[in-house]
Amino acid sequence: MEHNILSVCLSAVVASFIILPSLAIIMHFIVAIFPKEEFKPVEKSVNFNDEAVLSAIKTAYQNLYPGVKIKEITENK
Image (cartoon, rainbow, N blue to C red; front, side, top):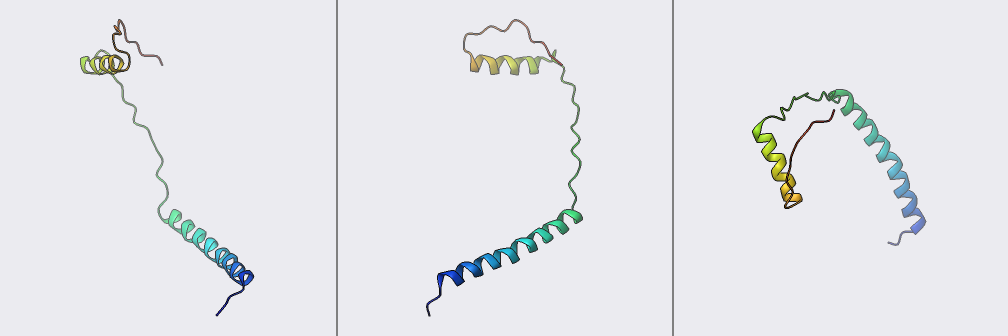
C-alpha cells in the first residue's frame, strides 16, 4: 500500500488546521474558567541597619571582589 506524498502532506495540513483551532478554543475556555490572578508585589521595607543584611551584603561583595573593604552601604530609591 503506497501513499502519494502529496496526499500525505495535504492530510497533515488539513489535520493541523483542525487540531490547532480546537486547541485554541479549549485554551480559551480554560483561561475563562481559571483567570490569571493579578500580581500584587508585596512591599517590604528592608532595614539596611540590620546587621544580618549588612553582613550578607559584605560577604557577597567580598566573594565577588576579594580584598575589597566596604566603608558604607546606602539605599538608592
